[in-house]
Amino acid sequence: MFGFALIILFLTGFLEFPSAKLSIPSPKNSNFLNLSNSSTPEPFKDLFKSFKKWDSQVGCAQFRRKHRDSLTKGSKISSLQNAEGEIQCVELQMNHVSVLVKGWTWIPDNMDNLYSCRCGLSCLWTKSSVLADKPDALLFETTTPPFQRRRVIHFGVYMDLEAGRKRSGYEDIFISYHADDDVQSTYAGATFHNNRNYQLSSFKNNCLNNVGGLDRALSLYPECVKDPNEAPKWWDHLHCAMSHYKFVLAIENTMTESYVTEKLFYALDSGAVPIYFGAPNVWDFVPPHSIIDGTQFSSIEQLASYVKSLASDPIAYAEYHAWRRCGVLGNYGKTRAASLDTLACRVCEASARLLKRAFNMLWACLGGLIRVD
Image (cartoon, rainbow, N blue to C red; front, top):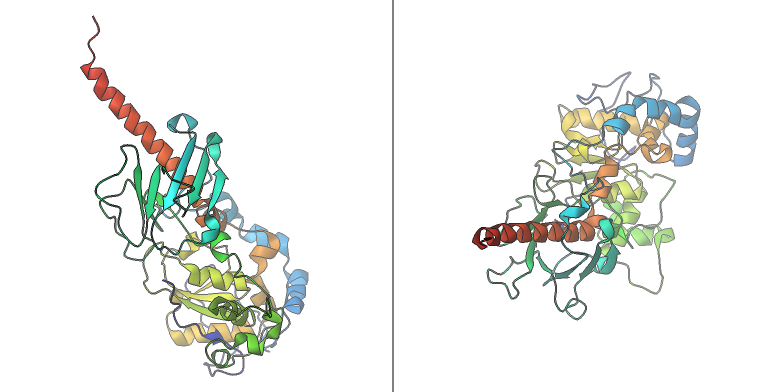
């Protein structure tokens, strides 16, 4: 998952794509904006100037009207759990839950914290066995939970966010990217991206041969350097490079339902327009008119023609950035609510709910053994 698929930074003027004449074939998906009727391309590099043109000719009011359905309908139940919905507090058995994250995991260290969750529940999420010396739940990712438990009341949590997600068979709570599982997690929140979002460029360049090679972006764009006294990481170069281009090609390693990874959200965060190949239901996870779904074109030539025309149409290109400028999140609000940002509380709530069910079952069993004369 961490190895990014080949990221190709498009476009205008360097790579040779099929030329667009007066019009180009329309993509199958209605999320795409028709390009301007003018046959004269208008190459641009200044993003602010394209925003200004879009504001004068389209504007947020029209954009909101166009996408009002996405504001009212929200996400599909089959794709996203209602992570920010109401819960029944009587279903929670505990006032405090501690989760100990075991072994090596890619879960960011900055998730370690004491959280205030719904219904007055406090949640300790930590990788430290000192802080959670008697954890209520043990979370495993790279290894499966052990069959034998060290404590009577203690839950095994297993997380698998890879495309071929599979339960271990030993967990009480299963976390994955899919809404059908116990707890869903997306990459759309801030936790996974903390310390990785830096300089956003308002000027978009032509393709530069994948920015000159591995880890060269900061030498080409010194304005991206965060701390001159600290060695840059790979993600510093990645974010900086993406930010300077109009488009980023984001390809999942597997095209399967709901498998939408950091590849797409990194590109959105950088201020580029992702050209995406991946989950067939990707629109359930992203803002309206924020990406180009490459699968909606009948051929690569058709896609290339569309992108080349879009790169020379400042108004049509600015429309792909309108969602954040106009506050039109659509399904993306639900996607963020189900992200790593809220995972700790949702796992603790699931643990407290599971314990309540266990006590109810135990009470029911004991009730059958108690004789009342």
